[in-house]
Amino acid sequence: MKAIVQHEFGGPETLQVAEVDSPTPGAGEVVVKVTASTVNPLDTLIREGKALKEFTPLPFIPGWDVAGTVAEVGEGAPFEPGQRVFGMPRFPKPGKALAEYCVVDARNLAATPDSLSDAEAAALPMAGMTAWQAFHDTVEVKEGEKVLINGAGGGVGHLAVQIAAAAGATITAIASPSKHEWLRSLGAHEVVDYNDEAAMAALEGFTTAFNLAPGSWVPTLEAVAPGGHLITISGGADELNERAEEAGIHHHVTSVNTRDEWLAALVDLVEGGKLRPHISATYPLERAADAHRELDEGHAQGKIVITIG
Ligand SMILES: NC(=O)c1ccc[n+]([C@@H]2O[C@H](COP(=O)([O-])OP(=O)(O)OC[C@H]3O[C@@H](n4cnc5c(N)ncnc54)[C@H](OP(=O)(O)O)[C@@H]3O)[C@@H](O)[C@H]2O)c1
Image 1 (cartoon, rainbow, N blue to C red):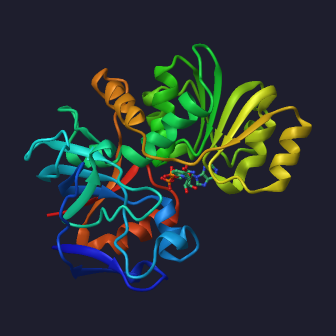
Image 2: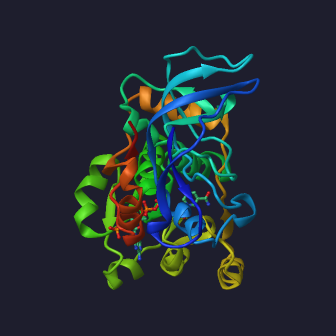
């Protein structure tokens, strides 16, 4: 089968198409004929050898999000050949999703909702579970709560807006102006441009803030009311921890995982018409390097998808 194989760490040019053996399913596993996957910012760090290196001995096949049809079913896996499925295999080990076939533990898969294309379904697992985890596991966002989302127009952010809206929160979304109208249509009540210093400085009184722009946590922290919650996705900054503690704010660092109940929750929201991934751009597998180049620019609107086959 064709797959993207990384033989060295480095820039997007290290993402090369190669012929490799197709996987076979073990007990409880499914081989998915992959028609769509995505790129996530973590893929860039891994590509450069700057994250999860212990899980990516060279050579490896990158990619986590998977959507397609069931090709082969291992013993005891509750799926049928031909069934449309999506999910996220094996995190934090390489999911090996940028390939024509990918083996996935059946617990990490769900039936694809009829209303979603495979490309849309591929846009959901990693980004959607990250957003779901923030607002329904790390904290439980409630109706009427004032929620701030920084980096709201990206892969995780646009799903986080919809998930918070479905919970009945009042949402302020921080993003560049070209995304404001679109974010309002997804459920944001207020929108703020991160380059507008006065508007950023005026943000206050939020009970929960989700910061998806790692270098820009200061205004998000300052907008949280004492006793409120700040959720970040990379953590690590001692200064952030100290300042949150001084201000009486609970700081949580999330790290996504595949949980079947989170995938099921995303499916429920999709089927209830409350969640729909937005695709920023699609690239064929052979142009995975270009998908990474666009991702690395850092201004995607929704998810960048890779189509296969
Ligand atoms: N810990 C975990 O489990 C986990 C899981 C998934 C993702 N993540 C992390 O979460 C972050 C977001 O991921 P993603 O997939 O949503 O990335 P993405 O699709 O690249 O989106 C990032 C967004 O940030 C916006 N942005 C850029 N500079 C900004 C600034 N200074 N202030 C505010 N917004 C800015 C960009 O839009 P505009 O500039 O056009 O508005 C873009 O839409 C990444 O750092 C990723 O590594 C962590």
